[in-house]
Amino acid sequence: MNINFIPAWDQGVLKPLEKLEVHKRGLRHKAVSVFLISDNNVLIQKRASMKYHTPGLWANTCCTHPLWSEDPKECAHRRLKEELGIEVPELVYKNKIDYKADVGNGLIENENVDVFVGSIKEKDNLKILLNKDEVAEVRWICFDRLKEEISLSPDKFTPWLRIYVQDHFEQIIN
Image (cartoon, rainbow, N blue to C red; front, side, top):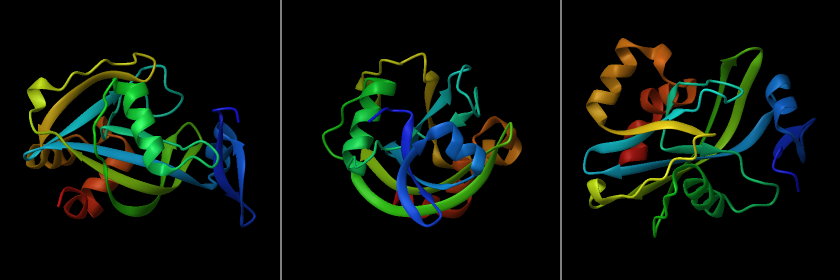
């Protein structure tokens, strides 16, 4: 199946639909989000400037749409490798989160997200190889500082990261 097709609900039926069309119509669709955590820090990424929505904004470690019939955990591992060149031995499933957000240019994320967390023991030794088509840069930030930065400059962060931090962060990091 073409990577531009994602699992989305159209008239109550889950089917593979073209990603851009799904976002234009604001259809509910499957997604995966990953948070890599080390002590009280989380790795965040700045989305590449050529992304078709929310370019240049800070997001969680990795977020994507699974391929049709792809296992969410396999998707999380695959995209960590594709976006950041990172392989972690274990990702822990945390929760399923639903949200809907305007992401600009007439596009809407209406996601049913499987959230995974990976624990990194020595963040300074983590080897990261950015896919520049996906990610402009990454940085580790402590949880309290992330909350503060989002509060001070929300427009620098993706709508979904703001939602995760505001409404779901405690269940994600604990």
